[in-house]
Length: 211
Image 1 (tube, one colour):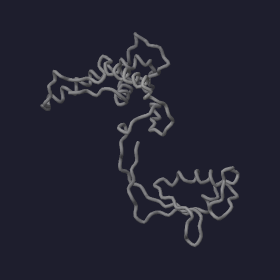
Image 2 (cartoon, helix red, strand yellow):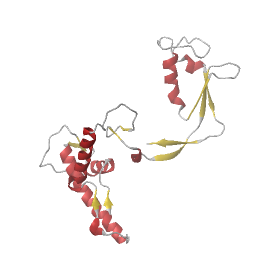
Image 3 (cartoon, helix red, strand yellow):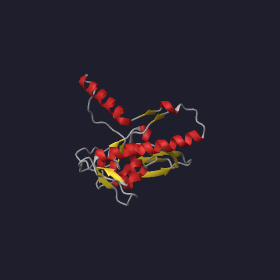
Image 4 (cartoon, helix red, strand yellow):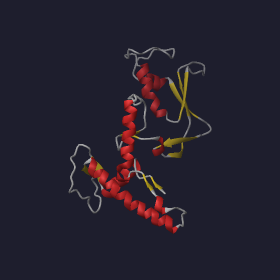
């Protein structure tokens, strides 16, 4: 049995279970003890204190899981269990591997789009996301044109996000403004107000949304 007891899910559980949050700017408090019940406001604690609570809680959770799976009769050799981060072995191995990559010139920094958790203020992997099927409507937003022919047609499930972008590009006071729709724009957002028609698709489609 291998225990994957590291990462964002474990950190979130520790936050909710003890009512704390990690604040790396705080010093380590060797006498810190979490409250018996989590309060409405999370208590900021140092990184080392937070890691210690993670180590404490994953041991308790693993014991509960083992009891459950033994009851279910899961065929496992329980004398050969593996732990993801016990005694910091995995953490040390990961750090050594990164230092080796750095020495080889294989580690680099770059600016690129990423999935961002606004609560943890950190990047998250695709594995941390949950896709849910939600009902939605499919729209075709038409800009400019004459005789029923649009200069630009944007198909989207989020039409409310389009007007701000159009107003920025089409506003005549913007140095990047280039007339694209066969008419002059004289007031802010007039393209969105008078030159755009929102057409709802006759056949609603289902879209996907991620938390």
